Length: 213
Image 1: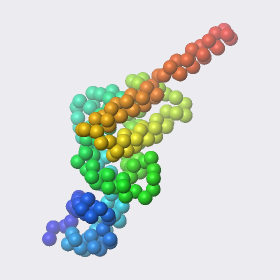
Image 2: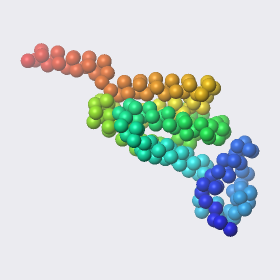
Image 3: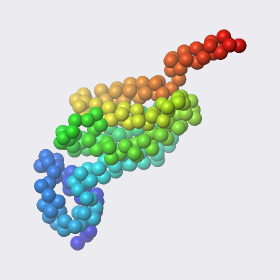
Image 4: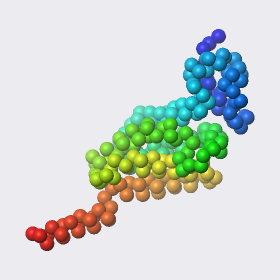
């Protein structure tokens, strides 16, 4: 008999949740339905929650890998790359919307961070840091003491907002989510870029220096 794979376990788990509306009663019962031994399950995952975490990580990796292999994406500036990522994320999630909605509804702890996002936070930060560094190099993003190191954190919260908005979106073709992505990304990069406040501050510094000249 062929050895069970992680992907087979993940798909069987997703199918079970979508059909039953809840996690299996035990690993033993779930393994039996797959016609494998319980220890074979533990060769791949430590728990059902670990399956959900692994699935979310694979989803994120799939989106970013596809973007990195896209020549058009590589030609984008920092703002365009981040917007393209969010559009790609929502598009990838569409085929798994029922499962994501189920995970969201099953969450026992109300939080602004969608279920499963904690498992991809480190990966997202690495991805966002790359975009921020590119933005700093091209001056799309302004270097600010204490704040620059927190840009990725702010982008993560904005990413979580977009995902949560999409989960609640009932518009045709999720057109409201598309608008939310565009508007929120422009706001984020306007705030990270050279702003009217920065210009006023620089003018104030200049005028102050003139008094001592």
